[in-house]
Image (cartoon, rainbow, N blue to C red; front, side, top):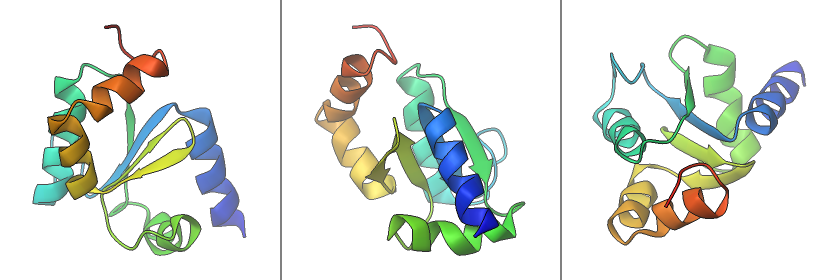
Length: 107
């Protein structure tokens, strides 16, 4: 239960959080790399959690979120999804709209 509380606190305390393999500057997965690059290109401030360095989160986050894979993007406590969804939302401007609506970037 301790790990679930840690995950819940991370998600609630950070408006934009990306759970990924590696880091934005040293990704260990192509999908994590692309997800981080999308967020960087949106000029949104985000934190990341490297699940490779946090085996407890890597094990329990899929149970918490009901999402089996990484990366996982969360915005204001809501799971957005993995890279495929993020890419689709980025391409059709939905991601920008969500970020603007939540005052996370300027129009």
